[in-house]
Amino acid sequence: MAPQCRAHSYILPAIGLALGIVFSTAVMAQDAQTVTTYDVVTPPSCTNNKGETVRFIDSSGGRSGLAAGMANRDSSGKPVVFRSNYTATPPEFQSFIDRHECAHHQTGDVDRPHPPRNSPEHLMNESISDCVAILRLRDEEGYDQAGFDRVSAAMRNDMAKIGFPEISISSRISNIDNCFTEYGAPQEFVIGILKQRGLLQP
Ligand SMILES: [Zn+2]
Image 1 (cartoon, rainbow, N blue to C red):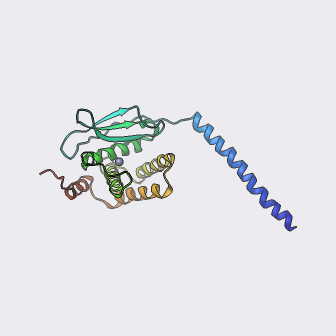
Image 2 (tube, rainbow, N blue to C red; image 1 turned 90 degrees about the horizontal axis):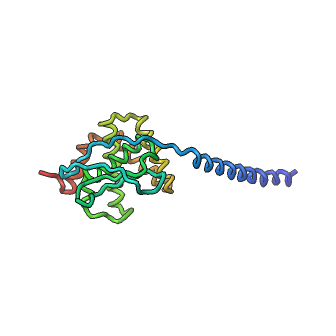
Image 3 (cartoon, protein in one colour; image 1 turned 45 degrees about the horizontal axis):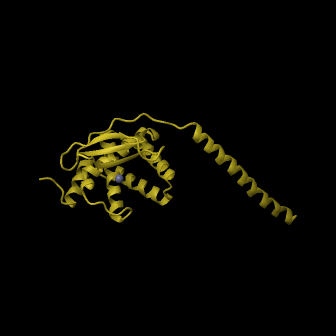
């Protein structure tokens, strides 16, 4: 009796493994066949901390299937946001990326020395830009909890695709959740950051 029971416990994991393999193959096949694409949203208005208008430019670079943005100055020194592969992510997350990149201009990040990648200073800049972005969506676009949930779902999905660990994903979402529920107007928040950095224009 006892050996039979033990035999079962070996068979069941084997079946589970086989099912797992079949399932993941099916998912891969589905991904390859039906890639969802979205219309690209109109960019928001964006002005940097020096009062310059920021232009949004759709660019063809970046990792295919992964929406991304980059805040920079172009070759003639004009402030820009480069948007890549926006059709790969839902409109709510496109809107979030636009405002996140804009925030790097609003807070003066773009013209300050780049902190080392993944240093506390770098992560702080990212958290600040995330916070400004979600506050603008709340106050200017009227995002309610359902809107917030669509942003966080897409954020989770895209970060998992890149391979971020769960702790990075959940702490980033908890930061925007905290901003969304606790913070005041985005303009006030940006002014506070500029003051702290000594970048407030007289
Ligand atoms: Zn950023």
